[in-house]
Length: 325
Image (tube, rainbow, N blue to C red; front, side, top):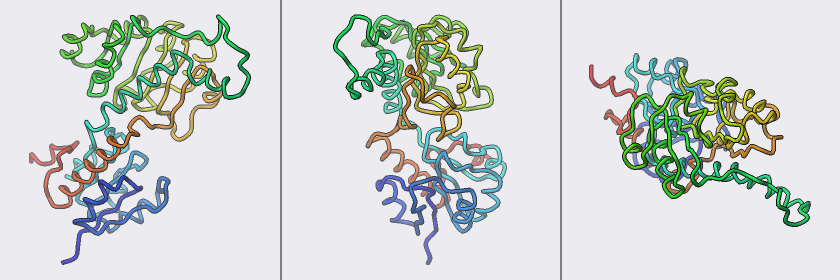
């Protein structure tokens, strides 16, 4: 009996590949780059299952092309690259990789916060260039973290993990979310506030919301102008949550003090002028880039795909309603 065929749109850690090769005939994009649209459609045409990445747009055209596919496993927690409504209508299961990268992403948000607050990258660049002439009392003055007000936009898994790591800095924590978060309120004394209050009172603001129509450009020019001129903005969620051109203007004009970004509105490109600013720290979407997290994502994605291809409900199904009718 011939094996099911699965296609992987880009190399993932061996921990996941090994699981898939035990059961299926596995084909993988051989190049370390996203597939073009035509390459994606060509390669998935005969696949019984697809393991895809955020860079792959999974929509009606893909479903029409991959007629044999029993499911699509996203190698990511977010799934704004997938047309969930269309897949649900066709009863095609989709999955993601929650939990395994929660702490890694929260840690990266803290790394960006400290780097931006204490001007680490800016001063590192001066030191490496040989331009430093010795200590001075007015050099590279940044923001205090201990005792500051920390604003968290989105109290989901990552937002909560990020907030809990503030305990060592005796911070005043406020958050905004659709629902109250008992954990943050009981353990940190956090307060649920409006977005407007959070923006106007926080010294540090970290974004942890999914990308949806309601969160696209949630942080726009109006929102940025609500912030303190000493505020530091951190984003490890999705790039389009921030109007990046408005952020460039705000950083140039001193409307806010600094930003730390791991995601961008039009990846892999950043908005014009952003990279030239000394008061922004930029990393290339690497919040989940730890050995444990990336291996865990690979195993989760593979486990989900195995279940879908073999006709079972995947553990991390994002459209479970297809199994209730």
